[in-house]
Image (cartoon, rainbow, N blue to C red; front, top):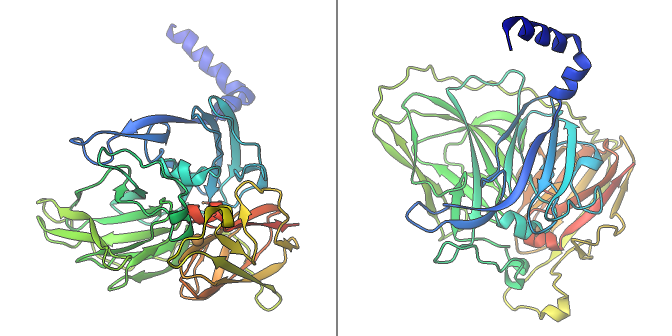
Length: 452
Ligand code: C2O
Ligand code: CU
């Protein structure tokens, strides 16, 4: 093409905005397929996994607040799937819940296009909502980052996707998904934790830098309690929503399945020093996640300052005085003895006394909420286990319990305790309310809430 023709061709493009727009709006393709990856070091065998775009975790999908996400999912797995965009306030038809909001995306070549606007800035993630215990357990999860219009100034921004695997000695995934033992106790807690898809020995940083670290718990069941030894990170957001910035001195970063935390890490260690990041959520099972290893580079000179509070996201605040109240009781689970499978038909958990299996999608909703009304749900954990309870399609405020004051989409409720969440039911449709321990979700701890 000579220069003259090139000019006229580009002139044509500019004069046809309609065509130009259609071209620009081509969806990004996200392809699911089996692959293999070194999870436990190059000297060990690769692990067969299921992946988005060939990597575990999937690609970091990054947008700006207000952007439209448009993604065509192509399913080359041997099983049907869906994609759920965890924590995003989106139209019901885009929520990725099989048989409730869409038909499953068929195995071996099915396609589905997701398209919706991203109203809230924050750290979110995506994962299947069909056979999730197995599909997430085999590697399907990825970060969805929605940037603030005016993000905090840092030297680097990083995402750590925390995944938990149950591997055998050949580094193969143990295929005992939804075993009655896991399902009736604390879920499939594995034996190998990876950060962004491989076990990490060290994470290297430079003295003086400021890092925004987005942590995502993409594990089936493992809860994390992270200490950054020698550091006191600032917590600036939790579950995608800003909190008043606060230094975590002794306090651990506790993340139940599906939860996220945004930290500002002031790297004030000396050049050449090493500091452990320890996870000791489960007593007597503490381990070192990785070492923060300082390079010998000369320290960057940064004035350390209190991070500014991030702007609140534009969700409606509930009216606590006018709110209607409902009590939801989570029950079941085992202490010690196992029930026979037949006796319980594989269902171990209940919501308000009733187990709902993953495919009983048309089961009647446990709640009918009036559109735009405010609600307080008292979530009662009447079991001896932790449950991270997640509501789709809305952002709630936690108004009591040990997470009081936080906004988000998932609340971790300790054994034999309760939390109250408040929200405006402003998003019409049938929405899931479930435990995000995926083995609990699949064996009874899942319900529908209808709005509108
Ligand atoms: Cu992250 Cu209903 O799920
Ligand atoms: Cu649970």
